[in-house]
Amino acid sequence: MQYFATSTLPSSQQTDCVTVAVFEQGELSPSAALVNEQSNGYVSKIIDRGDISGSAGETLLLQDVTGLESPRLLLVGCGKKDETTENQFNTAIGAMVKVLDSSGADDATSYLSEIKVKSRTNEWKVRQTVITAESNLYKYNQTKPSVKATIQPINKITFFSADSSIQSASDSGLAIANGMSLARELGDLPGNVCTPTYLADQAVELGKRYNSVTTTILEESDMAELGMHSLLSVSRGSREPAKLITMNYQGAGDDRPVVLVGKGLTFDAGGISLKPSQGMDEMKYDMCGSAGVFGTISAIAELNLPINVIGVVPSSENMPDGDANKPGDIVTSMAGKTIEILNTDAEGRLILCDALTYSERFNPEIVIDIATLTGAIIVALGRQATGVFANDQSLADDLLKAGNDSHDRVWQLPLWDEYQPQLDSNFADIANIGGKEAGSVTAACFLSRFTEKFTWAHLDIAGTAWNSGGKAKGATGRPVPLLVQYLLNRIEDKK
Image (cartoon, rainbow, N blue to C red; front, side, top):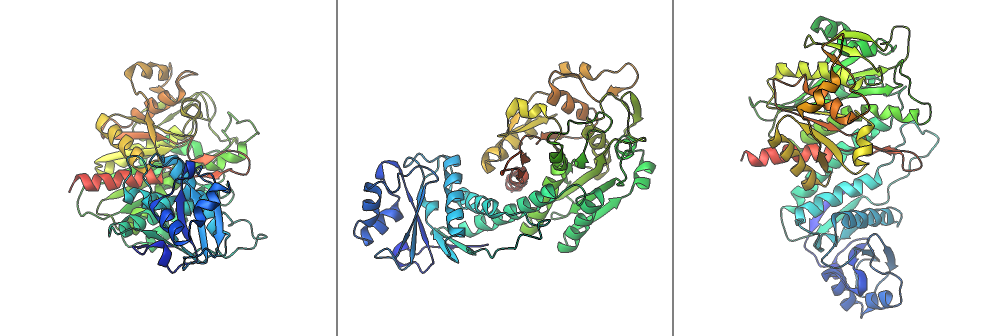
């Protein structure tokens, strides 16, 4: 999809479809009011007879409206005038794009960016429009050869604005959306396709696509030499070899990098502590942390951002096997700490801890790990917010702000010393689980034992990385908007 800006009024806009906002109680946006005037009150007549009420997400496609150059007019409900919320705006954009995509229009001009969204700028509305539009147009078909690919009817959307910065907002929105699409496709691929080797190959391809990205792949023998016995203990139960993937984006000379560590469990059966069969197919999504890192690196490379970012992806499967971890086994991490494995299904932290230690070699300014780590975070926060934990409050505050700025929101949970004793072990330095209470917190506490040498945050995305069950099942592309916004904010703060 292509996105452009225009200052042309709707009545004279040369386009296949003009889209304007209508509100509850028959109120019109400025462009809708202009169209109504040019059409001798036709829009008001449509509203008065009850064809559209203005509720957020309601649509009505009209043909050959008097006074318009465009053959189509799309009315989109946006809630109460001057009180449209972010969710209502996103709902309206999603509804608009779905109608446009099936309308036969090749291009359209949207005047929805002129409506007021609480505390949001024009740039935010345009960026969010692109992200929401692309998210609604995303279709997974890589493993569906029997389904014929359809030609997407809508190929171009133009925004109404006299502000020259709108095009920049559109470009950044498209890069974020492209990163989200990459993350979604990696997540949606089945485990027999998206293996650790496949992820490594995709990282190599990303390096070929962008000169600013250098990719390095460590094999199991390399990891063994480094002492990554915690990570390798997870892969022992799988026929698929583990990979440690590094994607180094250089955009800012010798500046210390931000390191993003993404959990890359391409399938998680739970190991010997086998998961229930119901819903186990969704454990292909246990690599969505790594998918988020891939999407973020892709987005910042497309935008050519002036910042250094290194993506580190420890990737493995977690399967039951004669050589797999057993409850009660003790392994030694790269940091030299021994770990008692009380539950083999708490494997994400076992691969992340070695990746976190490995990240020390990059002299990072910030380290953020992203992982579908605990089901407990879904109990705590549902699927609306990502859980954030940090050993530095300013970093937590920055992530909270980036979440609010991008509307890919996070919520901070405690990382108090009082929780650490739950990880005590009689036989090792640390146990890999802390009991039934505060499961997300103790998982973060485990990781914190390996982050003492740098400023660190942990994002638990188990509730936000994919939609579960039914026709809506699929990866979401989160937290790519959050991470890119965090990096954009860092760049802005350093100016």
